[in-house]
Length: 301
Image (cartoon, rainbow, N blue to C red; front, side, top):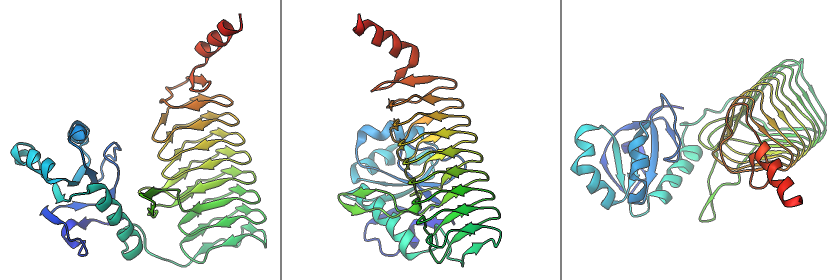
């Protein structure tokens, strides 16, 4: 990604009140340390979230919110401002413009595919922006879309989809992905798995993580090293998991959660809260495993 000035988004009809630069886009609730984030706010009830996020360098907001910021905040803080009647719509229009019309997120290049990789003849590899390193194996009928990096000795089974667009819409208008999928060294996927490209940042599966059959990993997810993802797991957008995590068969992880190192979502868990380091959770909605067992014992008496 590159630095972009608000004033250089030339198609905008909205008023750029204050110019500044940004190098990524993100929802207001997301933190991107050492980045310059363009975000949006359309309701005063989220002002505290904005004030606490020090990564935002540019903001799309309503006239009402701009007037509030002008009274005090903007006297002491440098931040770019676009004023709009619908900040959310403008935010996603800018995202799509940057993906489709600029090189803000990526520059196109010819595929780099190692001659020491093994790719099944029925696999489909798109024709640009793909890196496949030594020792990679790709199974039958698997599709590798553009903006995918597959590092050394990864194994991808049959019927997988790597780097597909995310299921992301704003009022039924498609939101296009600017990130990549990166599979680090020695990652292994069995069959029928889907890994979506990130919208604002890369979807990353770190080294030596293993994924069983039929799982879906959505946009902007990061899974740490040496983790195990069992069959039919759904990990929704922007989840960040540490190292040595375990996702049991059929578990579902809500978007935006953080799973710390050695966190464990047991079989069938529907996880709606962060998982702390070394914590095991079970149930729907998932709670700490011992509490879940106590509850099951109580209702069984």
